[in-house]
Image 1 (tube, rainbow, N blue to C red):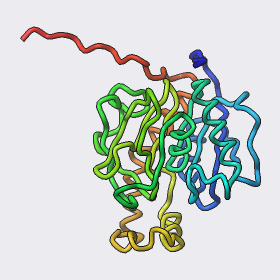
Image 2 (image 1 turned 90 degrees about the horizontal axis):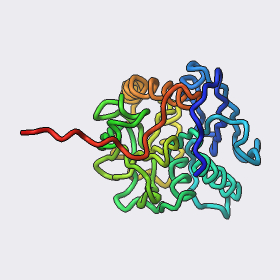
Image 3 (image 1 turned 30 degrees about the horizontal axis):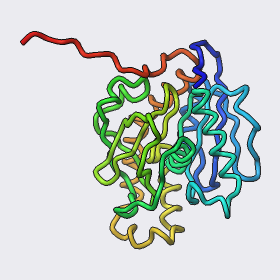
Length: 261
């Protein structure tokens, strides 16, 4: 691993990869730019990808309707995984969402399969794991975090040396970190009610499971207000990490003091 030194960048440049036109950056993009980031957005496959991550201070990979290894229909997925492998090797500040997290897991040696307990859909909650309390991005999140779930595949095995940061009752591997600056989250924080309603209307593979999920506009509106409350500051911290104004995670957590009792 070639770790990056802490330095300051006035306006960190972030490469954002959008695998699916139906999953835009949405509020996440607004939160990143209001924190000072400039974004180079690439909608796949039309916009193509850079040959390397040189010149970027951060990387964001969004979700999509395809599978993480569906290269036969989407051959450019291999190039996304290659860039993610480079991000891990370089320890570039990275945030991968849903499909993005699955691509990151595969690129770093983990495993993604169809979720054995079925799809995870709708407004939900994930829970912080112990390591999250000392993580530079996750420490300030509440114990229970509001998120939006919409996935059929699941990260069944984390990559070697990954640090688990959040879990849900159905699927354990909800958020993880690689090295000091590379993050994956299985859930969505970038959606809007309109986006989720569009997914629900057009999703054939999840149609049966969706019958048991409440996805009316009022419920989704409240859920997204709650998501913004927790994850907007998270996005700001991500920009600070990319800018070099926030210290990255320690690879070895500090030891707890021994108390006489």
